[in-house]
Length: 559
Image 1: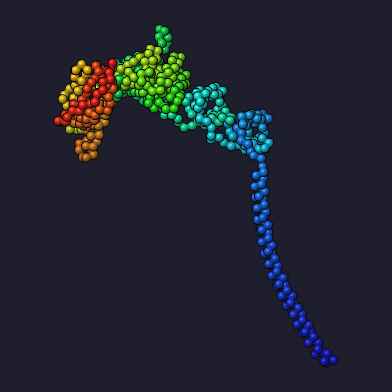
Image 2 (image 1 turned 135 degrees about the vertical axis):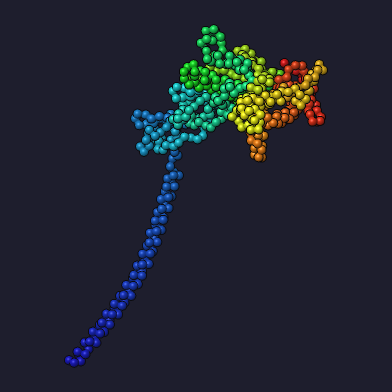
């Protein structure tokens, strides 16, 4: 029995050892299984990621296939909305009634707007306005939201105005974008050549700004203002108002200034008579810039000028159409001095001015340095009825002009003012007298040209014979610059008589070479010299310089 007791612990120990070994084996197996499980999980994660990526690629491919296999969308133009929720569109020149996708509010659509259709011709998307199309010119507006335009072939066409364009102020001659598929005007384009040539604003210039032309201004007032101000009296006397007038004479003598003053004066006087503000329009046409090398363009622009004038006058507003440098546009036809372009422009102008008779509020004013070059048909009675010569200013006229620029609020030299008792008005008058006397003196220093006529007579021409308002203005500007430069250099501040005398000498010096720039006969016509044919001209210079002969070609004389 004692031996059995000793064996029992041993067996238990062995059993425990065996159990421990078994547990260790299980632990090792568990660890291996755990390691395999982690590896399997990582593999599964990679597989899931690959599957997700493959799914994404498959989805992208599916969408791409759908895009490639989907029927094409169609673009159309929206017209109007119907009471049943459908809308009217233009598709390829055809008008269709189609359904609108519920996500698109019908009141958000604008006429002329582009929309997209699906394969069932239902509107699924709203877009903006097509930025492409034809450029057309507005001829006039209709009362029902339509307009008459001219195409590049000069054909007239009635078109619709889109909702977007109705927000803009439109006027005759505007350049507009036209969508030919739908017949809608969609956009107002930037200024075209017409706007560059025409200035509508009335200049802030009146008759008080013009000097030395009292007689001529009175003629202009009688010709232009009276028909505007007293139309009933003209009708009672059965007197037709003039359609236009021509201001002619040497350059720089105030022709353009007079035309601007007329437009301003008419508006003010009409407003005074009617007891309310009256707006007038001044259409300033730059003659040479109106000429266009392309066939029909110059004629079209002339039509647009008069169409614009008629549009403004139709509302009871006086309109002045001013053609500057008229001789550049409407030269005599069939004499060899006109071009093919001018030969077509003249008939167009005659046609337009003959049509002005029904509009009492439009008058045409032309300005020219060479009225002898203008086609006689333009100047006949019933067109430019009145011709007023704007001459060079005489001595008294020159004083009046200088007084417009030489005002008593300018800075004057104190030393010079002392001699006149520091009275500014007295000193201004002194400067005017001194300056004009120096300009108009028939002295050797002021001799300019020697002109030889065909009969052998010679004439000495002085600088005063080429005086003009522009020249006097230039003299004043030069004198002011001399005063400024003297002040900057530390000298006495303010204008004095020496500034003006120096300015006169400089201005005359620059004028010496002018006759060399043109043919003597043409020069004589531009300068305003009349008489027999000039066969020779030479300059007269002082300070010991030799006179210079000017090449002369015998071509006739100026009448």
